[in-house]
Image 1: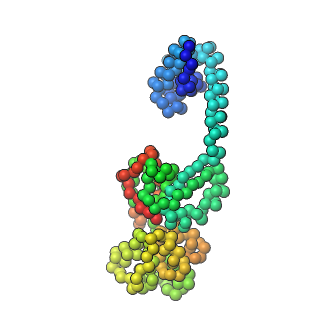
Image 2 (image 1 turned 30 degrees about the horizontal axis):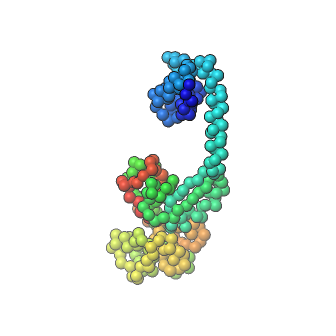
Image 3 (image 1 turned 30 degrees about the vertical axis):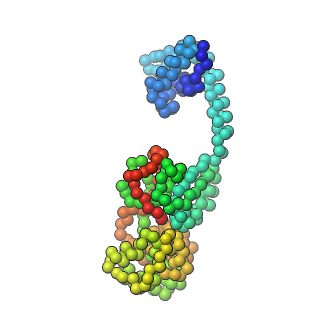
Length: 280
């Protein structure tokens, strides 16, 4: 008599608990035929019949019942020993652009830790286009536009909702803002998305001063909070600074947004050539 294969014993255990090859296969994420074949091979190796095959399912033979009890205990011991080797807290790796990390994520991490103390969140602030195979990220936050790849699960965090903001002192000097023409007379601040350039060109307006340029949205926001001019940025990144009183919203874009910030996770591990994302 050959020593039984561990996988075969797992399939026997599942079939014995469900008394049905189909349900056992669903639990093990296998085909019904694969489970039935392994159980038949186990019976052949043991030279014993473990099940009665019936039209509506299975029935353990007396020998099958006697054999299943210690097998169930043994598999439970293996599962318990394996579980003790695993980390106590689940670890999630999040890839997020630096500006979103500093202006949106970090102010919320304390509350997240209080609500989910069992989750070990590892954050990677990266400006690269996300590649779940290369970066080994579990989840990512990126800016983008639909349609999206079929290989992604996508949930929108926020539309762009662009706002023009300044420090409270500068806002008092500017006064009431009725349109973009009023803002074009002030010192403007933009990031690598060149939102001021795009808006002014769209409405046929010219800036009266050279636009102050930064490579990251967070830096443009900080410059505005320090009175250097007026930044144009998504409200998602501005909400904390506005709530603290460091920034004042002077103007808000009311046109419908076509894109926004999205939470992404892969349906498979590999590159995603069909969808383009850009940094924030």
